[in-house]
Image 1 (cartoon, one colour):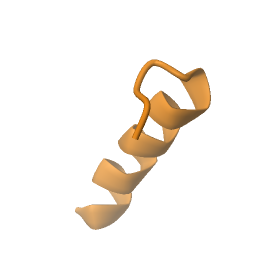
Image 2: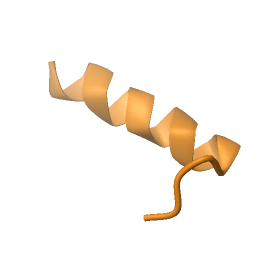
Image 3: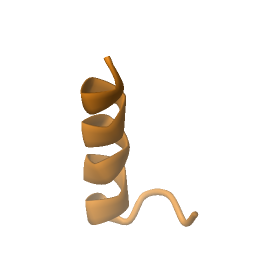
Image 4: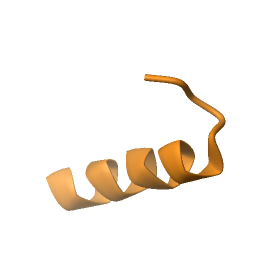
Length: 20
């Protein structure tokens, strides 16, 4: 479960859509 969520967030971070 965590892997899926973490992977999804990682993709967003890589895309640069979100700035955490």
